[in-house]
Image (cartoon, rainbow over all chains, first blue to last red):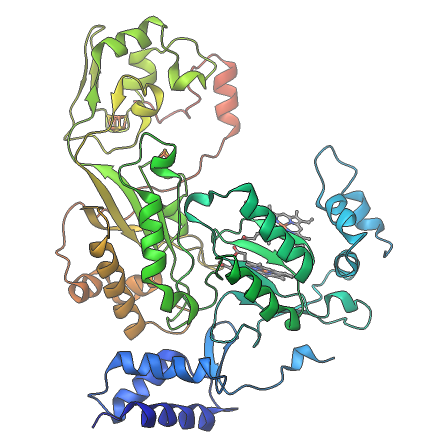
Length: 80
Length: 418
Ligand code: HEM
Ligand code: HEM
Ligand code: SF4
Ligand code: SF4
């Protein structure tokens, strides 16, 4: 069953958190994972749930040869 | 200032030198002095001292900031961070001097003062600033009406030729289309969610001044459907030398209609009996050759629109792929809903099946054109030519110069003329 918007945001946040350090997730990976568990979830809701996490600073975009969604951390390259 | 004996050699030639320019900036910008220093070091060490990518950006956006750091921050503290900011350019790159001054003032205050007008994507490229300068710089840019461009696995800032603002050959309003599509894809421009980059370039006619056919996944190129319009009395004026070929931009003062126009038509669909110029329009492939040579006598038809082509990109290993015709002719009227829908449908198919870093053109090769056409609901047609144009650029060969020295009027390689 489709998740209500707030639950969807938390669901995605937990997914990103669990993947941290193991697998870098792209927006499409997140969408596919949500749809696997909740096939009737509206794709646009997923887009905007990610946007909410990014706008609130709980997740960030990273670029490592492709664009990923991750939990913020201090970047190694920024330090000596 | 660092000592830069290797870079200094680049100032010795007859051409303007970026080393001279950077030194001028370095006198007031320590980070630019360090930029010269690290480049000199790279020339000596024969290895780059830059690191790519990472996390930096502005809040809310996953695009527009490209992280760069040096791996020698102790020696060159000015380039410890040296991030790039992409600023989305206006349609057709038309600026007022006031807008340019505002941009330069912002960059003088928040960055290295080094910039690139423009990058291959079309954006204004601000080269080199620190992480803590990003948000204030972004705030100043947006307060003046600017926004960041695309980067990463996102929709990239679209670009277009100047089209109807200056050019009589524009078959649709390229600048309006570019603006409309930029607005339509705002979400995807700032929030990377595709397998890889997705570019759009729009040219007003087959001259393709922005080289859309080679440089953009989505290439939109203006075309006409009906007949080339001929003014026979103007043709006579070209034949007699009263009108100069190509608006006076060739060294010939008189056009030889038979040799210069008719015989160089790639589909051999023209004829000239000394009085009347005829075109078999069914065979014309809209190459623009004849129109470019005598613009006052020949004009494109009046049933106008664009061809939509897909797939060009230049991967490092396999070499360039050119765009493939998908929709031979489409109406191009504001608000361009047909183009928006087509591009969204293509992105949907590609996002569903594409691997990380696989461009849409590569996916077509992997899964086949049939898979794409089925997914986007476009009927196959004979006009979906795979490589309608092999190369958007012109390369001169020694044989061209030799032929010219022997007196051939148009410097075409042997074998190209029948
Ligand atoms: C010996 C040194 C250099 C040479 C020979 C060189 C040559 C070139 C050439 C041929 C292009 C392509 C131009 C075009 O067709 O659009 C280019 C692009 C560019 N150059 Fe340089 N360049 C040099 C140093 C630099 C330096 C020091 C910087 C920055 C501080 C720089 C920044 C750029 C940028 C940002 C582009 C545009 C890249 C793109 O949009 O794809 N270059 N350079
Ligand atoms: C070995 C070193 C480097 C390699 C192999 C490299 C390679 C590339 C390539 C392949 C692109 C084109 C990407 C595309 O298709 O859009 C690109 C773009 C660019 N690179 Fe690099 N790069 C190098 C170093 C740098 C450095 C040191 C800087 C800046 C400090 C830089 C700044 C840029 C910028 C600003 C662009 C985008 C220009 C545009 O928007 O068109 N690159 N680089
Ligand atoms: S592509 Fe065609 S319409 Fe656009 S500026 Fe060039 S010649 Fe003019
Ligand atoms: S546009 Fe090209 S193909 Fe068409 S008639 Fe002119 S020269 Fe021939």
